[in-house]
Image (cartoon, rainbow, N blue to C red):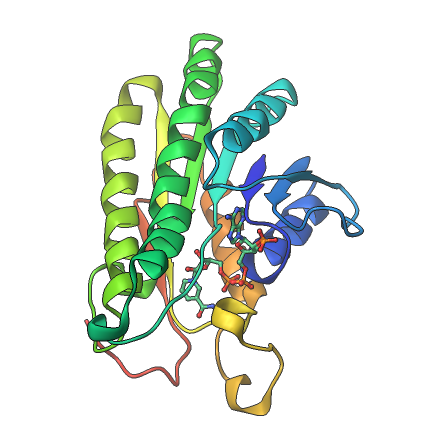
Length: 226
Ligand SMILES: NC(=O)c1ccc[n+]([C@@H]2O[C@H](COP(=O)([O-])OP(=O)(O)OC[C@H]3O[C@@H](n4cnc5c(N)ncnc54)[C@H](OP(=O)(O)O)[C@@H]3O)[C@@H](O)[C@H]2O)c1
């Protein structure tokens, strides 16, 4: 299996958990040269760069990856009035273009697997804000709405090749997201990366006749907003 955005946070927790459950994991990130967890092979990946995504997908295909978890993402929170074109490109290129490129680079591999009688899955890590927005969240939530649309279009387009596609929508999670330092007291009751990783494991282990379209998870302390 392949994880785009596996160097820290949710993606790293997934890589560790899935490897512990016997998966052969190929992880990608820009920071890919540190020590990799057991069972995880880290490759350099910049999801904003088409040739980098192509090389990552080719390596995953050569290794026989049966699934892609697209987790790579960046945060950005500021008023629309103070959101620059550079901010727009950083967020949209990473979160939206990245998912588009990864989907299109992995699709031919999953088509070949289908022709050989094999199943494949795509899991996208979007956010609980892929269907709602708030002040100072305009650009980030726009990127997450767009990720949701791409995920759902991929589910339609993948159905003829038996591709199962799942959107996982976490709420507040204690990671390095948006420059945070994980482990501080005020984030002790947030979701932990392992909580999200366990959802991914559940999705990937579903029986082959079961497609889980969407998972939404929140820490209990996060206000209920639908
Ligand atoms: N933390 C939250 O509260 C929360 C809530 C809902 C959804 N999410 C989503 O969860 C996902 C993971 O975030 P996280 O919380 O685990 O944050 P994180 O700790 O900052 O991890 C982000 C991961 O994305 C990778 N990444 C960023 N830009 C990349 C690029 N251009 N190419 C390849 N990889 C890239 C990073 O690797 P490199 O920097 O090494 O490239 C890192 O592995 C994101 O999509 C985020 O939007 C987070």
